[in-house]
Length: 178
Image (cartoon, rainbow, N blue to C red; front, side):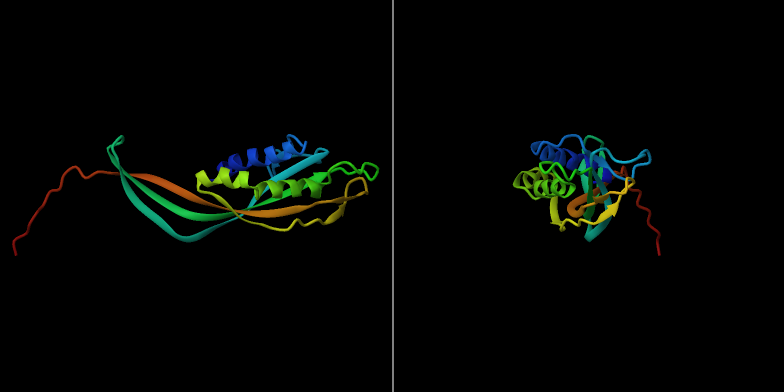
């Protein structure tokens, strides 16, 4: 699977988990070429930070009668790590709102849930690990302290490449007398 395919798998999972907690429409891909300005009051960003091949590449040829040729299939087990970040404008006077760390806890819980495991299993995918939530603070553009929590999660999946190999039409056997 490629990055965008992985995004299409995880976006609805994260959106559902957040929606169940009353937070809607906040997940975006980070570091996009069109991103400008400060984040909205609540924003969750996800980006790929590493991909690692695991084990050896598997290769096989399978006859494809529809195309009248062989499909050469190569698969590589992959471990792709994503980072989730959250920004939330917090008010010290409103103790009922979710903090950025709370929102990331909801997402990490959603990712390790049985529902997510059952969603990923038919896709031959899994969550390998979810790290602790880091919660550093910084001084924002309004001279207020704001948290910038994040966590990483590693997904196992297969990357598949399929190419066509034409069938052999005929063999011309030439012999040379010695």
